[in-house]
Image 1 (cartoon, rainbow, N blue to C red):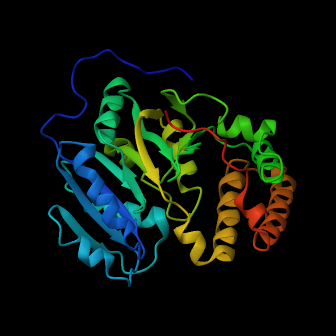
Image 2 (cartoon, rainbow, N blue to C red):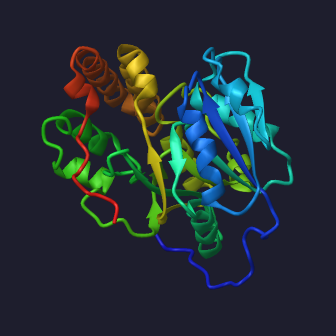
Length: 309
């Protein structure tokens, strides 16, 4: 893939323009306050925040909505991540051209939003940009990956949990490489900086993905439409992760495998590929069954012991 890096000095985002932020919430607890508290150090710009709420009952979103520039948008049902994010983006002022879509348990590092804006300047065809994401204890999460094929995905799914350094996982996650600015097949949906024009052009997230793979699918469709997905590790965020999985690990394992089938089967259409899709369905059903009963299998490939510098 060729880079669309530019030396054009025209700002991609005028200094006076606010940034939109959509956080998809479902009883996020105190993590939401941590996200909002991290924004002032991440950028000097105004951040207009929409909480796209899928049915919180813990009082956290009502408390957060009392803050300046924070709006609570109740979706009326649990729409899943992509469906709620779409609602949140649509609720922002149409004049806002760049939008962050984030999990509520993300915290931005100092200057991180400004670094994403700078990345947008360097890549005028960037439809989405993503930061370097770490776990709370500092491990780098492989958040800028290649698009999975059915064969790479199978190798990663079958072997990742027992052999994390297998060639399929390494090719897919690219986690043996140093974090450098580059284009990727897709970026983690836990923190995406989106060019609104590109997001709207591809009609946002596919709401048929309730959870998982909505970010893979979005990255794929942006690429097909001629946009880039750009990894900007100069921007850093910390992602707590695991909240939804901890609530109901069995349901989350099932949702993951349903979404994996939706994505991969959709990339192999045609009657002549029906046996391949049938084999894929059976393999994913078997892995879902095992994952619901084994935390190790469900956890997949362990993270490489790489820490942010």
